[in-house]
Amino acid sequence: MTATTTAPVATTPMHTTRQPSARLRAWATRAPLLPALVFMIVVTQLPFVATLVISFFDWNALYPDARHFTGIDNYREVLTDADLRHSVWTTVLLTVAVVLASLVLGLVLALLLDRKFKGRSVVRTLLIAPFLVVPVAAALLWKHVLYNPEYGLFNGLLHYVGGPQPDWISNTPLLAVEASLVWQWTPFMMLILLAGLQSRDNEQIEAARVDGASDWQIFRHLTLPHLRRYLELGALLGSIYIVQNFDAVFTITSGGLGTANLPYTVYQSFYQAHENGLASAAGVLVVIGSIIIATFALRVVSSLFREEVSRA
Image 1: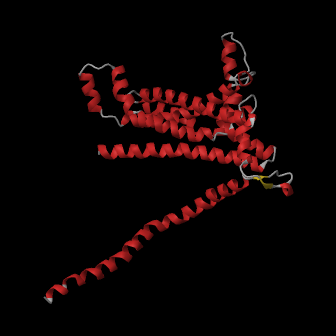
Image 2 (image 1 turned 180 degrees about the vertical axis):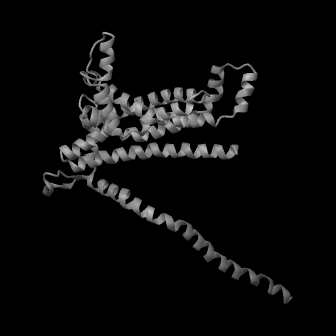
Image 3 (image 1 turned 90 degrees about the vertical axis):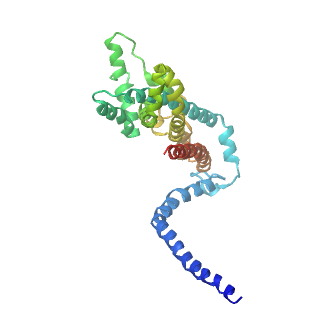
């Protein structure tokens, strides 16, 4: 009877000695990330909180003493004002057109680069180059080198064949902005889709060929379903960046001719009209929209990782 009382005593000291070491190891692994976390909070989160607070005030920089709390009136104005509603619609139209066109062209280029041919690495490098160009430089390139009605490349080619000499920016302003963004974002889509093509199961494709499947049938029933996640990822990531695009609109059209998107409207409200509260409300709406899109993008990325882990 006395022996039974001494058995469980040895387990408690071991448990208490292991717990602090596990906590120390956890803090030791997380400590190097703390400076980056503090820097991110100071640089991104604190300015966003300040912007959120300002968005609830009627605050004109020219009359700082007249500022007062207005609640959600600034948000109501952003959603009901005709010009602001038009900028929201322009943002949606610009984003959808650029993303869809970039995905289609990126898919075509990815299918071509997935084949083996001489100089494939050189061609791939040349196709990636537009995505590496600074956005402002790319917009200036399209505005002056390609679109200019007097010395632009497009009108030069049309003059060579005896065609008309249109003013591309004045006649088709939104299409001019969209074309420059499609040129810049197609390589990004191409890289994502090319990664998806190279992760296909080659044995499954060879089996389909042995069974007599044509190239179109393989693309429709095997390749396209496999690329669905990659297409979603490209569309979501592209939407995050194009929704916030300011460089092309500002450089090519200066927001005129109906091309002012929401980021450009924020710039106008803040730097030209000096309406800090209204500009902050519009900026908060842009951030909320980007967060919603980013949430879906993260879900797609996590699902891709789960699929790769399950295959491994």
